Amino acid sequence: MSTALRNREFRALWAAEAQSVAGDHLTTVALAILVYSRTGSALWTAVVYALTFLPALVGGLGLAQLADRFPRRTVLVSCALLQALLVGGMAIPGAPLALLCLLIVLVRLVGAPVNAAQNALTREVFIDDEVYLRSQDLRGITTNIAMLAGLAGGGVLVTAFGPSWALALDAFTFVIAAAVVRLSVRWRPAAGNPDEAWFGAARWVFGQRRLRILIAFSWLVGLAVVPEGLAAPLAHQIGAAEHAVGWLLAADPVGFIVGVFVLSRFVSAENRRRYMGLLAIAASGVLIAFVLEPNLPFALLLLALAGAAGAYIVTVGATFITWVPNELRGGAGGLYRTGLRVAQGVGVALGGVLTEWVGSATTAIALAGFAGVVLTVPVAFSWARIHAAPGGTAAGHA
Image 1 (cartoon, rainbow, N blue to C red):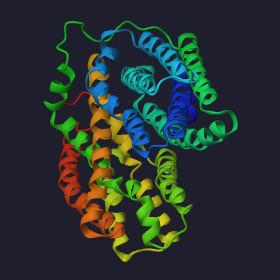
Image 2 (tube, rainbow, N blue to C red):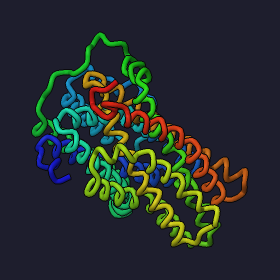
Image 3 (cartoon, helix red, strand yellow):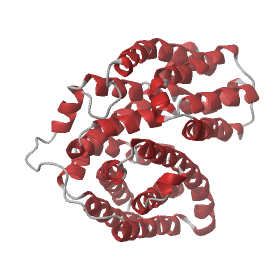
Image 4 (cartoon, rainbow, N blue to C red):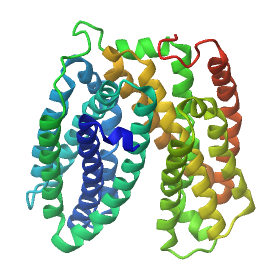
């Protein structure tokens, strides 16, 4: 990972993304507190929270393609400044609730081409595949730490200075991100063809068997995240204190950070691709142990182990981006990210429905783990055949 950080362009992209992720979660906390304090309505608070998620799904399929049609540095700088303006509008004291809802939708929509340009440009920055994969490890670790910092720091900042000042701070971070990228990242012309059909990247991706398998791996994450939506009922069922909900939520990302570090430090890129299927099976398989109704320490260990095994997803994403032609990486990356987020949302919702049906959070998690193993095994076998084929992991193999 230190090798990746020696690259000046990557350092700028990495720093801009880290503060953007932290700022996004700070905004989520600030808006939740602001809306609830103004309306006293849990429903309105939930609606505004949903608005931080849903636009990214639409934008991921459509607006992500802007990262192929325009110079990617231009996309990053322009979108960061636009996000600063929109979040700054949210920071205005007394802004109407309808305006806040509109602004958060627009901010999340603008975030789609940002993420697509970030992913595509990071791949362009590195010639060496091994160094590129290490850079994605660093991004995965940093993103999770920034997420936790944004959520924790958001509560502190809002309590100390109020939601308007917290939102203003987030707006300022976007200005900094724009400046860092503009000054440190080299300008490159648009990679894509402006005459390319709008969803041409999606059609191309689904026409490639090996990419379909990688997308299947990403969708299976939806079952591995079921415990995230059940943290509160899980804590109650295993007799843990209310504050343990936070521990249960943090266990998976902490395990993920450790898993990514171990893979990055001790496992070559080739071996990481070879063992992706086994790690994907393990990420779900660990959850089956929840059928034993573990106590709090055991539950935290299981979630951390599942998160550590789930570190395989970094290799999946990096391999996917590498195997997509540069001129399609923006649209293809948007497709990949959207599918991943939809799978996570569906998985959390499915976990809630399953818990209502069986009447037990631990049983629901165990069933999700079992289903994950059953669905992952054929995907893992398909991946093993792709990997074993002559040139199966070569960047140019189709």
